[in-house]
Length: 208
Image (cartoon, rainbow, N blue to C red):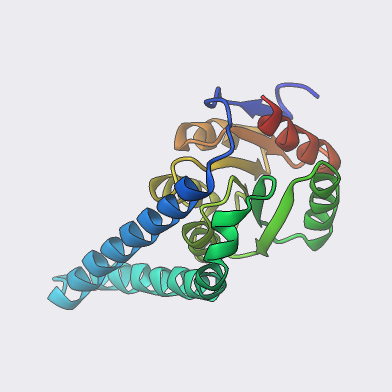
């Protein structure tokens, strides 16, 4: 694997969060998301002077609604199982945001063999952020081209809500690697890297 295939930032060493810290971070993430949504809704209701600004506000609200729907779909189960979460933590948990089902299947299979669970898969950037807010997962793998919210912005929003979550990305071309590292990704892979190798590199992040 050459540097044109994958690049890595230097993330802090990963350590498993205690059950109490995990639940606390989930609650903080949900609170931060709700405050951001309230600010966006207030701005939209206040009105904008130009058509472009109104369209931007409407688009942002639609993204937030999609994120909220993903959050709610997972939060119900999370609240129901909160006692189990506090009593027993399993291994690392991963969310994959990628449009290629074959790629996701390969990555999931290799991660599972290393005791790492893919808890959710989506092909939508807004859903990815909502899932991470609900789960405060250990790692999220993001494709650069996603519906509603591009991968680079997903990286930034994920880290704003769940700063302890590691973020990895897959990009189409090597000239996009720097932008994702600057956004906060721990590792960035080009599409030339086979999915099994991507999964092995992700597993290595948890062993660092």
